Amino acid sequence: MPLVTTQDLLKNAQTAGIAIGAFNIENMEMAQAVIDGASEINSPVILQTTPSTLRYASASVFAAMVSALAKKASVPVAMHLDHGSSYDLAMEALAAGYTSIMFDGSLLSFEENAAASRKVKESCGDVPVEAELGSVGGKEDDHEAENDYTDPKGAAEFVAITGVDSLAVAIGTAHGIYSGTPVLDIKRLIEIRKLVDIPLVLHGASGLSKEDVQTCIREGICKVNFATELRIAFSSGVKAYLSKHPDAYDPKTYGKAGYDAVKELVLEKIAMVSTVPNLG
Image (tube, rainbow, N blue to C red; front, top):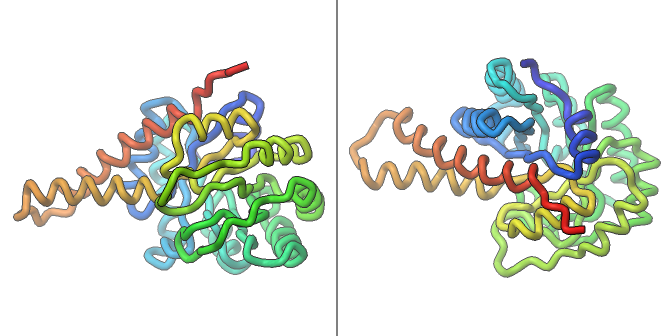
């Protein structure tokens, strides 16, 4: 089917008390693995690219590739710009056919972030826009920051000013590999949820426990991003194949090994976010 936007995907997830898995891709094999995994488990899915990925290949290349794969998929597929670092990049992705745009102004002041996010939202029309308030710590792509937790009242004001469709919140997660066990501020998430009615997004989920992720979903998160773990899975699959077949020279053979590793991980993560037990 054609690419869909994230608008209905996230609202439906919000209503159902589950989340949609959003997976960062770097190449064709990872895109295939994510869509094939989602199709196998019959779940909608979001594919994402970051600014550095779009320097590796353009937004038009990734949009065309994912669009072609989505047309043959049995589940809804959305294409999302993750951590869009500028207005120009957001517009490039929009023109290329991305069906969801994130503008990340989390390193700006509140006023600058709100103004820039509103400008992107106004320019995107019916294509939904994700923004971030506060700052998720760690390093993701070109984005590196210390944790700056989202203020609940500030989040409500930010959403009212910008009109964005979803909001990434900072509650103690971090991008990249965790050096210790993260401690999430679930009370803060609950307060944000009370004041903000649009879908909330969890960044930095790679390495979080199943229990932590599902607790966040029960308290209002309905999009969960996975990036670092997918890169590790793909690279580990390729390395394992080449260690057993050091004379291999056909990229299709070791690319398939990376594909298999990513697909296995995607199946695990989708099952985690789409089936959340009610503890009440």
